[in-house]
Length: 306
Ligand SMILES: Cc1cc2nc3c(=O)[nH]c(=O)nc-3n(C[C@H](O)[C@H](O)[C@H](O)COP(=O)(O)O)c2cc1C
Image (cartoon, rainbow, N blue to C red; front, side, top):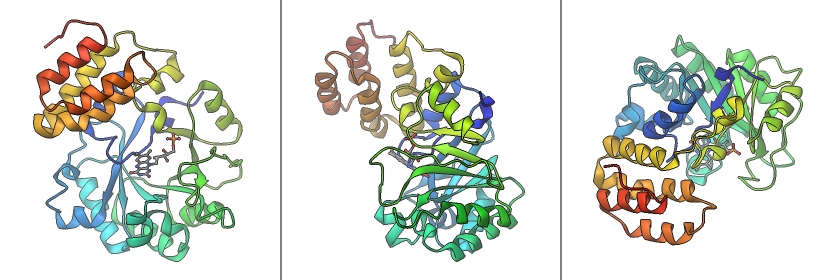
């Protein structure tokens, strides 16, 4: 099986924030993590709505920071800021399909349609920093334009260290099953992404020539997922993990923002359990930290540890 550092947690906007990354590290200290995507504009202009984008990463182990944008110079500036803030590598988003990024901003997945600009951005970012630069992309814009391999060659020529390949097109979004092409003859390491959840999935990616795997949604409500795959470790005391995650969220965002923000995590942790939908409905009404902790403790049948 791949080395631990070749297991990546996928960047997920609104999810892979610092508290979630801290929880994952408790199970998998040596895996590689990628931040939520960060706009190069907000970084450069110190956008007032994005203060949490100005995290420092020095204490976070092997962590890449993901940037998106359509302007090579701004992307290079953003990469420099993140390098100064302790990022271990810079990841360029060339796969995000949401209209705000891919069509309105001409960034993310749109760069799969504009290989010239994609190459300019890669070269500018590689020149700007001393740390490795990676790219995350998809198979192509749509089923008729699956030209990921051309983008990989541009990445290799631009000095990019590796490419994470989500096995869907921009048009497919998150629907259908991910398709993972054989990458044995690619000039740089390719990391497989999309629907990877089990040891068998990981072995299949090894056989197809991938250098690692990147796991996203399988981590939701299961921050131990990679440890489960690599070491067969599934924790028993879920309630303590949930409460610990909630504490980290509240430490980071404060109680007022942290309690509503935690609702989605509470839903994911409880998914599939008996009474989960009633629990979700109740949690969605709660605004008070102590009440949320009591509800979580009650749901998992424990006495509150607060
Ligand atoms: C809620 C959500 C947010 C995401 N945010 C990002 C992001 O910020 N940057 C990015 O490159 N991909 C983002 N993705 C895509 C994931 O990184 C990943 O490519 C996708 O979920 C497929 O992998 P999976 O099947 O393991 O989840 C996001 C996906 C989800 C579900």
